[in-house]
Amino acid sequence: MTASSPCSDDRIPPVPRAGLIVLEGMPGAGKTTTAMALAAAGHSVVGEYTDDHDATIAISAHPDVGDDDGHQRNWLRKAGQCAAQLTGRPVVYADRDWLSSLSYAYCTAPADAGALLTERAAWAERHLADGTLLLPGTYVFFDLDPAGGLARRAGRLRPGHPWNQPGALDLLRAFYRDPCHALCPVSAGLAAALSLPARLSVSGGADPGAVLACLSSLASPS
Image (cartoon, rainbow, N blue to C red; front, side, top):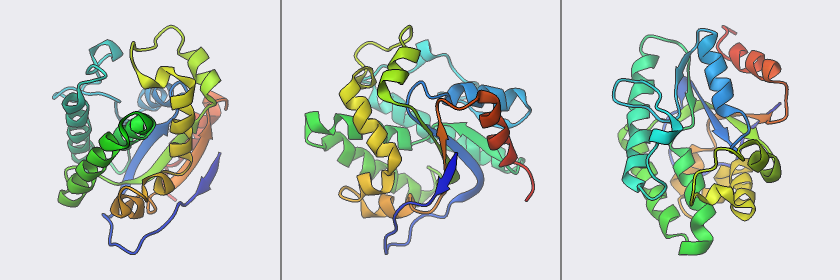
């Protein structure tokens, strides 16, 4: 597990929300398992997809792959839920955030000449500016090779999803290794914003207990 900071830009980006820790990264790498373990340990956790009552919904109830509005509404809803929890808790963990919508669009860019990525980048920049999306204080990126991720998810692959394909997963992995670099050609503002949160890298092959202990320590007073 290693920490680092990505690139910078001369624009004035949003201010990271101290105490908001977002788990991002490769499918099958252990994000949701870790989020569930954090919740069981008593930490405040916002699930991957939620309803209006802050409850995490099952994967079978997630919006369809093509339901762009449904996915984007989820990231906005979660931002509001995270902000509300941060008023009473010093640390809140979130299983994915709006960065997932950009990572998805990055994977599909070869097929649509980057149209969806451009659209979603503008959406994210607009909502970060008005405070309806949040920039976390820390991103935790879970890494796993595409073949390993596909093997782990063999029984729960969603039909038609690009992340079922090794080529798309290679692009996804490149995105998560350096989101700032990936977004620089599309949105200098987002690239600058993503240079600010602390970054922690976690191997999807690491011992789950060690990962839980590491992430739990982020909630401990320094």
